[in-house]
Amino acid sequence: MVVASTARTDLSLQAKNADGILVVDDIVKQFPTPEGIITAVDHISFAVAPGEFFSVIGPSGCGKSTLFNVIGGLLDGYDGRVTVAGDIVRGPHASIGMVFQEESTFPWRTVSENVAFPLEIAGMSKRVRLDRARHFISLVGLDGFENRYPAELSGGMRQRVSMARTLASEPKILLMDEPFAALDEQTRLLLGDKVLQIQQQLKQTMLLITHNITEAVQLSDRILVMTYRPGKIKRVVDIDLPRPRTSEIVGSDAFGHYVAQIWSDLREEASRGLRDDESRTLHAGARR
Amino acid sequence: MSGLSAIAKLRYAPAIVGIAALALALLVMEFLIRVDVLNRFIIPMPTQIFEAFERVIVEEDVPARFLLTTREAATAMALLTVTGVAIGALLHRVTILRLACETWIAAFASAPIVLMYPLFLVIFGRNSTTIIMMGFIAGLPPVILKTIEGLASTRRVLIDVGRSFNLTQRQLFWKILFPAALPTIFVGLRLGLIFALINIVGVEFLINFGGLGQLINDLAERYDLAGTYAAIVFVILVSVLFFALTERVERWLRPAD
Image (cartoon, rainbow over all chains, first blue to last red; front, side, top):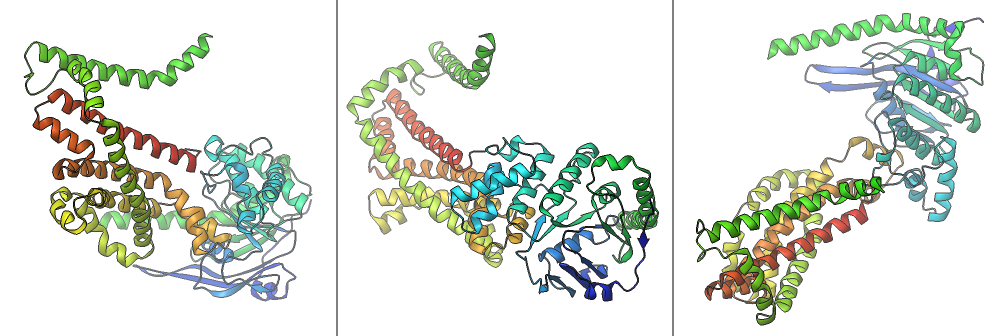
């Protein structure tokens, strides 16, 4: 198998021309801090094609979550623009469904009521929305848990409830911020299978923000590697692994090759992040 | 069968231990009074208090007094819930108001409001309204403060979920902030109830208007100590009644907890 990877230089132009359902065009986001202005996201551009699984990977502190919030419309005050099917994102957009890193089910609602939440907001009758919720609960493999409360479920099950809740709003793009970060490696691989199944079934366009290389390679068609602060594009890697995929692919040579390649890109950035972190801790200690 | 009885044991164990502890405390009191360690002219024996129940209930019209105090407490509680939660929500929403008022509301909670009863008598007259308003004002600070705390401690990610679904401010409040804050709000309501009930019984006692507070005053002045303590037990019953009620309402609103 040939490993195809392409370093792209003029991604801004490419994004404009691409036939993407989601186009992220030249995003720059800065934050004022006591130490001066920090550029969290620096001229990031990419386009995601319909039905594509696109991942953004980078070390901690590279601005991934900032990018997630910008694309999701939860953050404003940035340069550049995000469009969904040509429509400029100026706040939370109906076509973008968000799945958060932190556990985000509503503890006072049952699984059914959680998943039916967006349908309730849309004004659907109780019978219709619970009926539709059942379909999405089944899609994430939680049949039989409809009337349970989140406190009765495991972390992985709760994240699946969150995903079903977002899918129930039938977004064009599913935007996920490290949804399985808090789970153990084995559960994460198995939930990855579930995500692949769902994507195939719904032909869902997905955008995953992650720091986990295995997860990114297992799931994605393309991976954007970000640099450590300021978060720029380091490289975009095409993942030419066969579909439909399962977690069994983790054992293949090609998989290992992609992981090694992305790690070699990330290693330098992650080391820079670590050094920066240590020096900041040292300075903070010295100030005390 | 042995498994079932083990579960039953587990389930009722706290209640049984609680009642046994109370019974033990009463037994110790009884013993200490009988051996004259405690003065029986100041503290009546628990057995005398038990004997006094029937007399107090029949002769002093306890059911009507119990109802009056309960009705006053219920009205104060309803006012507290509506006003306290609304003020708390307003202060949570308007940051400048919260920063301006939170400290003195907390300070107000420790003020001896019961001493303001002459002022309330002048404003509302010698009637139930004075008593209800005293209870209401006394219970307000914890309800307001706990409402603010509950709303402010709603996890950021839950609000972000609401925003990602494009909820209006009203939907965000009723569908996410309010249910998330409910457990803390109920802590405030229970604290408010305690403050309110103390003040209601206290003012009944002071203005000699009616209810269980007045009965305690009457019996104390007649030096019927066993009867006085029996009447105090009825005040505790009102409190238990309201605690059970708030617990039930909370379980209805947040069945998962």
